[in-house]
Image (cartoon, rainbow, N blue to C red; front, side, top):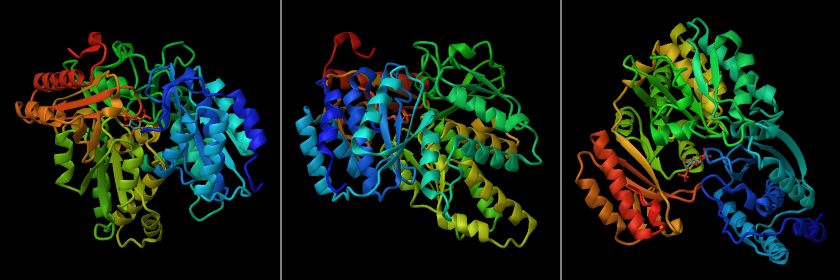
Amino acid sequence: MNSLPLGKITLFSDLHPKLYPAYFNYGTAGFRMPGKVLDSVLFRVGILAGLRSKKMDGKTVGIMVTASHNPETDNGVKMVDPRGEMLDSSWEVYATTLANSSTTEMFLSTLEEFVEAEKIDLSKPARVVYARDTRPSGPALVAALEDGFAAIGAEARNAGITTTPILHYLVKAINTKGTEECFGDDSEHGYFTKLSEAFKKLLLGKPTPSPLVIDCANGVGAPIAAKLAQYLAASMPMLLTNTAIDNPGALNNLCGADYIKTTQKIPPSLMTVLQPGQRACSLDGDADRLMYYYLDSRGQYHMLDGDKIAALVASFIVELVKAAGLENRIKIGVVQTAYANGSSTKYLSTRLPVKCVSTGVKHLHHAAEHYDVGIYFEANGHGTVLFSQQIQNILSGCQPSTLAQSIAINHLINLAQLINQTVGDALSDMLLVEVVLAHRSYGCVEWDSLYTDLPNRLVKVLVEDRNIFKTEDAERRLVSPPGLQEKINDLSHKYDSGRSFVRPSGTEDVVRVYAEAATKQQADELAFRIAGVVYDEAGGDASQRPM
Ligand code: G16
């Protein structure tokens, strides 16, 4: 096939017309909107994925149908490049343009221009692997996606209902099969085996962790965590909660990682389950984010977010690299976003280089690739650790001179297996945290005391048009609307250790306001005062004005 099968695409495209006037934007994590408006988008993404595969010489591209932390009625779709990473950002623009073509004719002509501009060799094969989460709108959207695959003639493998990180894993495993960089067997079984074997090796000789309470957000993390539990057996006792995937409206409702981070409260469903001192964690709707928390002896709630995970993991890896005698050969660095708590940045910066980038795994991931071992975690619990291929080769070829070095090197090798290096993975990260806690003989209290968080508050503001908000300096400064940043600065300076920033969300139709200050009351007050200023600037429904 050296030209686009226009007749076939037209036939299918007419089954998936763009019915909604909404503007579709390939944002922080792909397209994400109410599920009912996404039919045409999914069909077009199916075609785009086929073209992406052709462009990548027939390598397999991934498609995940999910809206992750968003409410159940939302859905979304994101593309995964052949190395298991987020879609190359230059193609996001094409995805947005194609999604917004209002008629089949316009869609076809945009498609032709795009094939020409990207010099796509249409004779190459197209291969995709796709999956979805548990949202009720998923099956119909997957059907639209499959029509897109059929229209472009892509060879498509259905990975069923699974987590976003497993889909990323599958993409990389498929594309590295039979090569020196083989990532693992390209199946869920391969994923579970890889993680559980590495976990068991890392815990050898350590006491079995006490039972961990896992809030599965009533999402796809529930069945997947249950399968993982079978592979881990007695090595990791887990108590799964919020597993009601068939309960309408339950997904991410009063539970899940985003609920934990934004409300800074324990899910009501865990009130009677969680014992003081017991570790608990929450996944989000597609199990790519992880938040830990616990109740202290007075029943007080404490949150251990992505920043705390980064601090725990980074200090452990630094120590292992030193023990392995490799500190002069391995450059370790940490990547954060503006949401990172000021105290975490201070803690990490005294030990390692720390870089701040814009929100979104794609930005963090690329920045982390500049280090031999790049550790990235967003405060919301999304993150992973990357070991460069060169470092993995050095580790496996290393000749240790002492037993201590040999042990440390083996731990590093096993960590590189345990960690899903393609993307943030709540379950893999959870096992990573459990390994570090076991090695350090830490409970939550000891982990929490690595540093004390500055009190902080994250607020969502509903505005008429969030696209008027433009930022610079890794989203720490607003350049539009004009004059708003000065007001934010003036307010922030009125509070001890006050820091705040405002940015439009790339996954929800809101503007986010983050504030931190010396006390909880000050952080809350600063956040709500800035939210009020944002609201007054950008307008909206007066009943929604933040109070
Ligand atoms: C996605 C991205 C994350 C990002 C989050 C919120 O997470 O993968 O990197 O932090 O959205 O983004 P925003 O503030 O732009 O809405 P998820 O878990 O929802 O896929």
